[in-house]
Structures are given as C-alpha cells and as structure tokens.
Image (tube, rainbow, N blue to C red):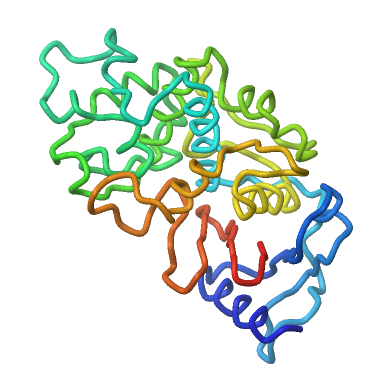
Length: 289
C-alpha cells in the first residue's frame, strides 16, 4: 500500500477514537461502478497497523449519518442557489416573516443563509440533533425563539438548529424538500438506492441529522465534491459551490476552517463528520475519498 495512503489512514483513525474500520476508494472514476467495483479496500486499525477488517463494513448496510447529514443539506442549498431560487444573502426573517418576533433584534434581522450555513449566524448556544426530536410542534418556531447575541461572522457556534433553518429556507424557496431537490437535480444518478431522510413535524427535512445511507453512498458524495461537482461527466453541483463548500474559497471575511460542513485540516485534507465516527475525508493529493 502507498505510504501516503497509510499516513492518511492513520490520520483518519486519529480523527475518531470510535472508528473501527474504514472504506477507502482511490483512483480516477470513469463511471459510477468505480465505487462499487473499483479499487476499494476494507481496512481496520490494529496494534501493528492496518489489516483487512475481520468484520468489515458492509457496502449494503444502511447507517444513520447523524451530523454528516449537514453535508447533504448544504448540497441541496447549493442546488437551490445554482438554480436561482435562493441566494447566500437571503435573510431568514424575510422568508418566514410570520414566525419573526414582534420586535426582532438587529442581529436576527441580519441572519442570512451565508452565515447559517457556516455556523456563524450569531446564535449563542448549540442545539443538538436530538434536542428537538421530542418536539411535536414547529421546529422552525423554536429556532426563531433562540437569541442572537453576536454579530454575524464574529462567533462560531456549531448547531443543528442552523442546519434545520437552511433546510427550511431551501424548501420555502423551491417548494421541495432537500431530499426531493437532490434526487431531482442529479443525486439519483449516483445510484444511492438506500438514501432516506427524516422529516420534522412540519414536513421539512431535519437538516442537522436524519439521513441514512450506505458507506458506498458516502463515498459517492465525497467523490462528487472531490471532482468539483461532476459525476459521469455531468455537472451536478457547480465548481464554484464546491470550492466554497469545501472551504477553498471563503464566503466572508474572517471565515475559519469550517465551511459548508467541510473542515480544512491544513494538511491538504478536508473532512466532513458525524457524531459517531461517520467521516468522509477528501485527499486531493491522492485523488482519494
């Protein structure tokens, strides 16, 4: 195995102490079967190094992606922006004026898609993926009740609430859920046969969590970003969006390492993660996911 590949496997395992195995695909894809039948290896971490997994991840096993879902939410936002239905500068309060408080704060009035998607919307606390699950009323109404104590772009606060607001904005702008929009825009061409997404009580894709799919599907989405939005020669996401999503191009002054649920690791790699060891890593140097 290439020494650089081994180094990246060590990096990946260091990223998640819960990780027991990884699925790796590398090479240049020429058709969608690449991730299914190409140079894919099942590896597991051992005391002496990386060996074929005794109980490898199964390509047809469906996994809950937890916060890795945000990668899909933000991809749907990219489709909506590309189609002209949504803009990074669209304000949350303009899209849902009926939910705004009677006297909205100055900071709330400034919240836009640009800052929600990068977790710099000025909110003061994290809303976990499970916090709203017992809530049978509007999750969006609950989000509007949150305070916005910080100026936009000055305070990073990771929150599944932000991702839900992004999902709601996409649906309001397009009339489609994030899942419907992705499948109609070309994600169906990736052959993601087990791709499902939970809905909130108000019928909106849960945004911060709720996607279930296979490890193979995760590889395909990672490959889509690695190849700047192209799949089998078709431009499913624009290169401009992918560069912003990964973090190569910043979307506001002072933006940190976190982009659109991709994080720049400053070693040439970019990661997108979930709560329980779900990680997609782009390694452009090796053309590898």
